[in-house]
Length: 309
Image (cartoon, rainbow, N blue to C red):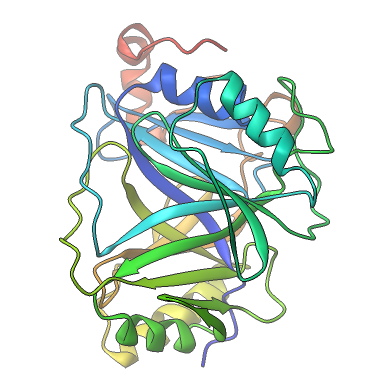
């Protein structure tokens, strides 16, 4: 069993409109935009990152907003819902705030004794705000104060037809089974970061998911550095998984592999971090380009959709 993985690093999803996406995460949820860059493989498309003040691993939601992308179809074989941690007792404040912005799909509930506010993003993305004890410092702004600020990720839900193989994989990655409630089984990394929980939802008759706007593209797990990442890669290869070589993503190093349930996993390093090309006070303000796309700067600055701020 691996000991290097500490929990979530980031979650990356697809969107249909960059300005709308930016407004939702900064104005509605009060997160900080920590990086404005472009997709490595499609530089005409933004890659937008949102999180806490420094983009701490375990807080970072990222998006590829492909203009006018068709909305994805929900189903099995995907991360169906991403959950954020909020302070205990702040659910009502969030219900009031989300209603003010006419956010759709708002439902109150509980899971494993934790109060949850479920809601939808602009492209039908599914999210939850979960009351939990969490000592991480939230980013505050746009009307979101410390009493209700998002601390980072709480967990992510994987919707699967046959959960057993993915549960075995999570166990190999250092996750331990915590509890089962209905069709949901919870796994967590003991001693991990505060974003150390995965819930597997078993759905025996659901259709396969089809990716599009509002879909999670991949989910990334955190390791401290490149040495630990290489240990994880070797162990996964020895177990029979097809794992990519290490890829430099400027702000972290990444490897990718497909799970038995069809979800794309990434293992990302905590180093070098989002302040490698911007100081912390100014994260997310300037357009940052991968070096191989720097020659496109003039064109991209004129063609990429302007963001409000």
